[in-house]
Length: 125
Image 1 (cartoon, one colour):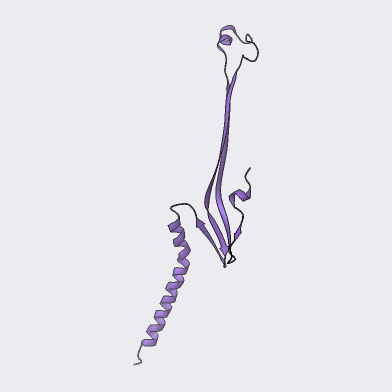
Image 2: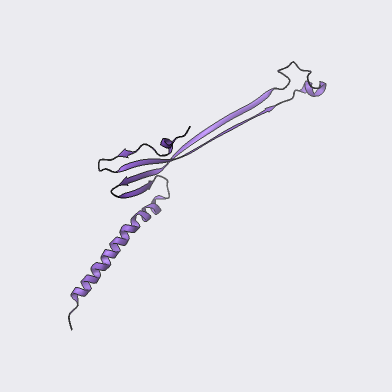
């Protein structure tokens, strides 16, 4: 009923060589039930007094449902793997986590540049 292509979709290759994989959340469920009913004449006259099939009528039902919700896209390329979320509310945090390594690299480069500038501008005594 559900295979891996339902959860992780077919890969799409972009012109720059990146591969995009759509990812979905799949849920499904089924339920069934039934009951037999005694007729009024059977309660009054005892079992087996009816005409066969009318003795114990049956009532029942069944149902099922499937839900497929897109979660996001997995982007693989240029030595990186990123998850782009399609769910609302998580995008800000995901973006901050993705940007954290590059921000640390920038701060480190800024600190090194500042240290080089202060050592080069000092006058000898």
